[in-house]
Length: 282
Image 1 (cartoon, one colour):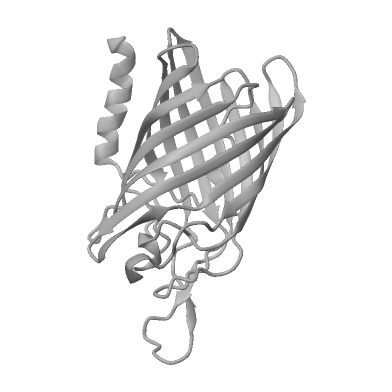
Image 2 (image 1 turned 180 degrees about the vertical axis):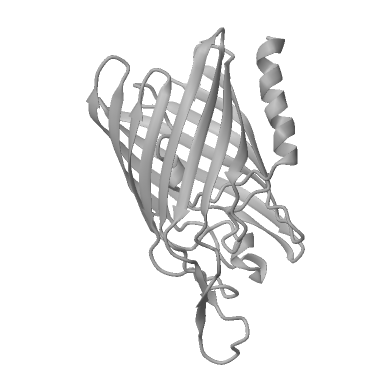
């Protein structure tokens, strides 16, 4: 067992030195739940830090569920509760609800192609404590998410698009995000008793610069683009799952960037991101 835990521990140490981050506004749900015929419910504790001189610290719980409705179709649900602390103060609350419908298009011998469609619903507050958008539990827009995922016994490939609709009502920034193009590829090593280790590469490209309220305009509204807010991000995600029983598993994951995003106007940048939790399958 020690020889399997050691690589995960090494990855944890690497994450302390490198600038792990996630700029995901919701599209990472595509390919995040395997296309298998069982119900899955999980609860994770998520810690993150944005890094930099004005670092934000994120602590939260994330509920995920993949519920089979009928053969080759499932409902995917994600809902976080987050507390954000930073130099300007602290804000907390329920985040945005993500709902996705996954429909199998084709399957054969542990291989499956699935279509995913749904969105992120603006259930999270955006004006807690009158703080900027980066501190808020919600993004303030109702977004449309579509994508495809291809699963094999060991590999996962997925791609998707997130359409951001409208502008947040946050009174400080009035953020309007650009759309996101998303892709992931991963491999899961399962030939270990009671344990699965996985490694994924995730790429997210914001297709337009984010747009915010000009801070120097007192009367009326003037909006400006945020320079370099459309950067490409590429992350490596290490995942592990240890089966405590046939239906209960312990989960862990760590992210490390290959290509870093600098701008954090939306509050999605991370200098360190760790998640641990449990999953029930039935």
